[in-house]
Length: 281
Image 1 (cartoon, rainbow, N blue to C red):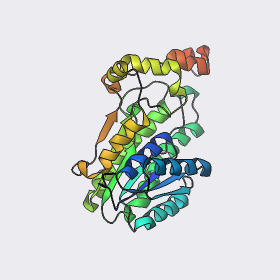
Image 2 (image 1 turned 120 degrees about the vertical axis):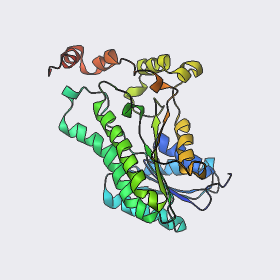
Image 3 (image 1 turned 30 degrees about the horizontal axis):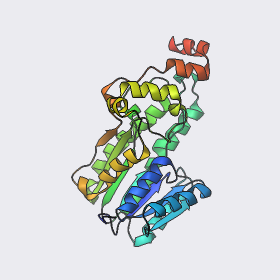
Image 4 (image 1 turned 90 degrees about the vertical axis):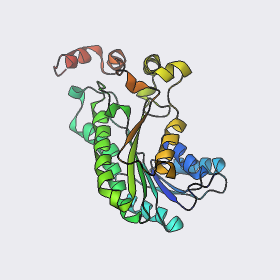
């Protein structure tokens, strides 16, 4: 531990997920007390043990609840604040949903679910936690490269992440007077994320067109994303707000790979041919 974050408290939603857990380890390593929120008690227990193994002696608590339910987030935030009488860092990592699905094969329920999981959960977390951040602090949202790149067949997720970036910039404006900085990290293809994105052909497509992925023969790791979150949460970035940082191996230097053939394996080629021509299957 270097104790740069000693005395501070961090609240992470989606805390048992790959990026949430990696972030918790990184924050605890530098002295922050951490509360992890997630829906599964068993997964949270494992996550807490993993953080303590990584940072022995760290203050780590867990809360089982749904990040899309205001009452759950309010209770978790109060618990986080009670750990040291303050709340300094918020990292809403809950996301996912939607997957690869053409717009004409989507439905209102699945599209709305993606908005709720990604964007609404981030709104609830910020609205709940800011009044508790009386010493100022930092909120680091989780965006994605899909917020900047045009990615076919991923409209729900891309729309939700684009919304997070817009919300983040508004939050940076509104909360700046309270000395609360708001930024975002845009992960590229990262191990532990959406299962469909981890399909071998998808990984290879990204590795073939991302400069660092090609050189290092890998896609992103949760630790890569956690390092960026830690930077934006800490004193090293005290003059940065309203920004989004891509951690993607250079993915955004290129167009997104053409994943038509892979998506056609999921939804069927006739259906994909139809939607590509603007016809409902």
